[in-house]
Length: 241
Image 1 (cartoon, rainbow, N blue to C red):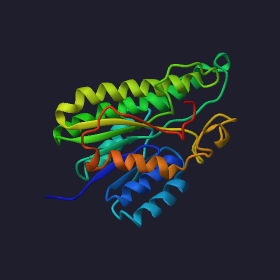
Image 2 (spheres, rainbow, N blue to C red):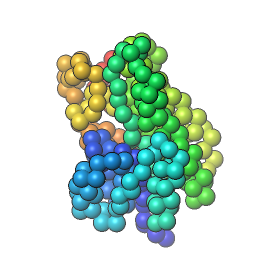
Image 3 (cartoon, rainbow, N blue to C red):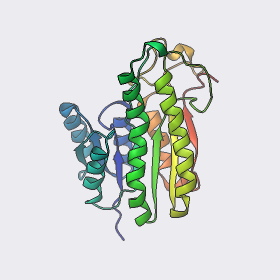
Image 4 (tube, rainbow, N blue to C red):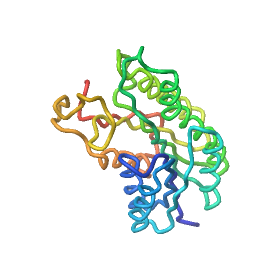
């Protein structure tokens, strides 16, 4: 029996995505690092990851499109089963709702929600064929709570939709031993957040680290979490409780 474990991470070459890639490589996964544009950052990340997982690879693709998703998944699948998908890609927009252009609206929903939908839609048949797998979606803190967000409307709608996708797929994919969960970061040092977002608004008194988000992903991807699916885990230091 092979010990090869493969994780595909979208938006994997900076911030939270990069921290997740490093942690999963440390956990023994071979990493498929997806990125869209920044070649220099991608090569730097691969160099770091290769010290922990020498057979990891870079795949350039725009996962807001079906062609991009099919490309990255086919590249990974030729190497063996894809055991884990982390949907991390997603841009942020802080702007009053009525000032948001339709282009900005479409872009934010596309990068945060459509990309995850397309990746899940393409990878679940692969995981069903191999009788198992895991999907972890990276959301937004407290996006399961309906509240007013005048300056982040498309972003919050996308992340709330991501939770509905998470729970729905957790239920429908469970018979094939596919687990689907979500991790919701709060104010993270390398992340994108509102201009006033800082450790001063967090009960624990500081901003989070990308590695702290990665540690939760690592747990969900481990055998210790084999009975967890459909879960939403906030990593936010108590913000907005």
